[in-house]
Image (cartoon, rainbow, N blue to C red; front, side, top):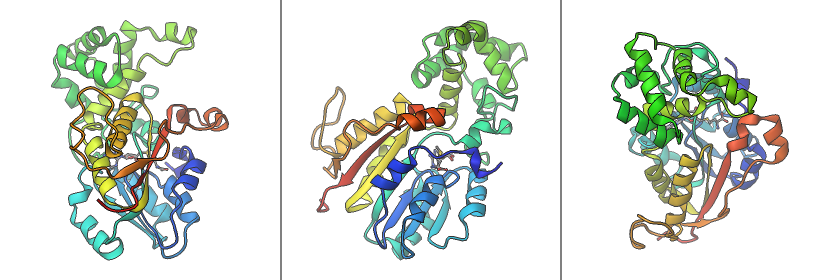
Length: 321
Ligand SMILES: C[S@@+](CC[C@H](N)C(=O)[O-])C[C@H]1O[C@@H](n2cnc3c(N)ncnc32)[C@H](O)[C@@H]1O
């Protein structure tokens, strides 16, 4: 599978808002196939250094084939929530960025490579094993995860991570298919959902495929996608140089809510129930785009997966606190 398997979103906005200054240091927490990295590096000078973090081995191989000859780029195999403690990260920081980063970027979620590759099991459109792991060298597959669920825990996951209103009924249909020995592949999972929400009805009303939310929810649970995001943003903010910038692109409301609330808290804004007390986080950031930035209409039309993207930007306050 080639690099066209993933079209990087909001490329123009990313290269304009997160341009790496002369001799700057950049951290990409979700390197993927390196589409954003390539664009940012193409506008940067030779003394820039770019550190990419990626948990998916297949993506790392492709990015190294594509961009490995660029000596400014280093790639670390890690989850962004763990990278801060990795020895490789510590060595790289000591060598190249003792004062921190000028730019930190994350483009959350799954890549086109993962979604379009049937063998990865992320898609309800093609037959494949029920895997859905971003890092296929570790953890349990979606099928193994489903086998551990009760109707209540599965319904709760579908509701929480998929915002699925028919979570109970869908959970029951999935577990029934599992019990009947009819759930081993992606299309079996999709068909279990269609028993509750027929696909044809949604297609007639031009609604999104009824399996979308279920696949999203299970993928988020299998990869523990949301649990470390807030803490990662806090770590990233403290790794920025004064006036260094952070930009994060999210693709659904659950991610965006965490990004928005964490950036706001780091900017000293506490605006909802359940927030920690105002003294709980040091004020490290200033918001650049309080409402976030969405792709332009031309991009939304030419690359439909970009439609749900939103980038939030902030800048480290001038003096370290
Ligand atoms: C939307 S893609 C990024 C695409 C990339 N910007 C490009 O232009 O090719 C998200 C990538 O982040 C990776 N990823 C998701 N969660 C991660 C995590 N916790 N740690 C490290 N990588 C992660 C996924 O494996 C995927 O390759």
